[in-house]
Image 1 (tube, rainbow, N blue to C red):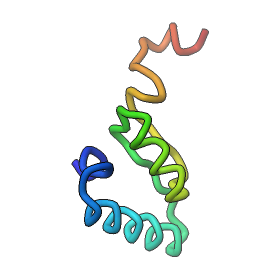
Image 2 (cartoon, rainbow, N blue to C red):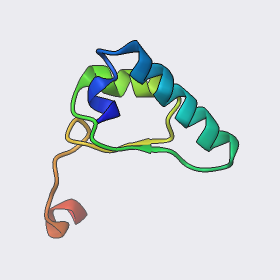
Image 3 (tube, rainbow, N blue to C red):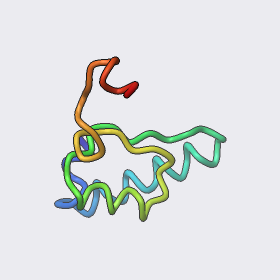
Length: 68
C-alpha cells in the first residue's frame, strides 16, 4: 500500500501529499488507514492528514472492550 511505501519511496510520499491536499481542498476528510509504524504515523501527521487508523494507534478490539 502507499502507507507501507511512505518511508521508503519519495515518490509515494509526494503522491500522498498531493492526494491529501486535493481531498482537503474539495472539503473531504482524509483518513489514513493501515498505519503500523511510528515513522508512518509521524509522516502523516506532518502531512496534516485528518485521521489515522491502524495497529500503531490501536489493535482491533471486541465492541464490549472498546466501550470500557
